[in-house]
Image (tube, rainbow, N blue to C red; front, side, top):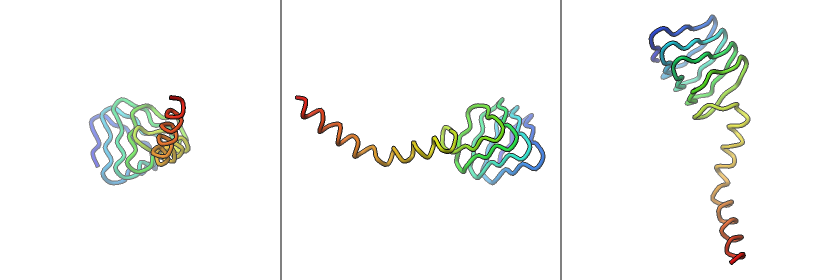
Length: 103
């Protein structure tokens, strides 16, 4: 874990191993930062925020938000993006076939 200068961490927060928090960041109360989370500097992480493993937090986060991914996004949005990424090869194949029909 690496916690930089002037970082403030609220009560009852959990910061798991290999997490890095850049300088002058304010972590609220009851925040959970899972393993290998990275937090950019000069941000405010609201009370009750939960960030999944290997998330990259680049912007301030409102209280109670659940995040995942790099860059960190609201968890359901990240799940939808991951599901689409797995389908991209088939989608690209369909696009190529449609384009070939147009010619």
